[in-house]
Length: 227
Length: 227
Image (cartoon, rainbow over all chains, first blue to last red; front, top):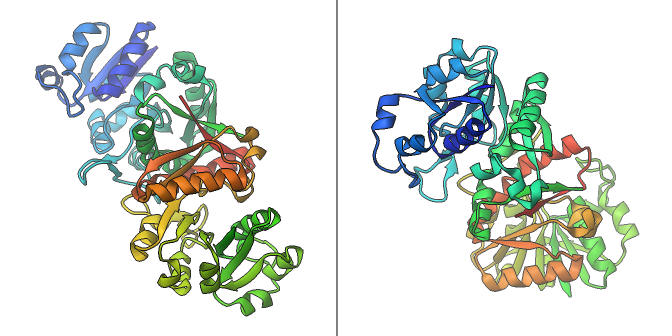
């Protein structure tokens, strides 16, 4: 499958590595590929520069945001929360038209210190902002409630016995995302919360997620909804 | 044990009924007991008027907020989010001094339609507002992430195999609340998230909780943190 990933950070790298390893053709999009490849220092999270990562993953192509969007039959938004609208604008609304975007980004705001707050929440969400900005895109919020290594390998936590959520306005797109997350990564337990406004709920799980990371001393956990 | 409950709504009733049935002496506080007893119509959620409930639970005493606070060795805040500070102010700061308050309230704002949004979140929380307003009170946020019937009977959901959280500045008060929730209701799995600012995280779980209620068609569920 042809997959376009928006964003070259750690989440984009983990997704790209897994999907490329399974034989999909992946283009990761960035604002300026030459600049991204020229970076020699770690990113803000201490991860190695992209060029070093790409040498270990030669099957993954780097392109502009527009090239990633054009390439992908399905798109994944792994940009930062604050950079998502800009990145998708650079990708070009016409290149997004009619496509599914799995929106993984969280609107984390580090400007007020640690732990981060959210730059949008409560009566709006990043997923809704993206859907409003690009009405032709089928935005499905998912994967944003787990750390990257759990996104691509749910079985790494309790054998996969925990939950993921989807939010989106297009029922067909949500069904396809549920199918893809199962086929790509092995997700079995996915709860459809409803339309895109329900992404407020999953984006607002980030504050407790961050505190649980602190309390448990590991990001390798997830929420299981029990009845 | 002498327990004071702030608020006569459904949550206060469920807590009072369980604690009184187990032999604790419970005073439920309200602004004006005569007015509360005079109400003959259901509350905003469709629950029967308090007087009808009290006839079925004669061991539970109704008093003013101040009488409930004075009576309680431990206090539970089961007022509405918007009414909590007012209720505790009416209880009297002097009557709260040095006591533990288990803060169960969520700052739900129904004024903008359904589902409710939060009247405070992200960079502040109701629990922090209460702690700031009453520095002599030992506020421990807990129980606010489950429906009332699960608060008092965690075993009703998956045999109790799921989690509760505590947030608070006073380590001794948190340890005592963890002990009480086990002794009173049978809670076994309680995660200490940290200081009172971590209540932002659990209060912000309400939006996804409400959407899960819709998706699952029952409020009898909870989050289990799996590793």
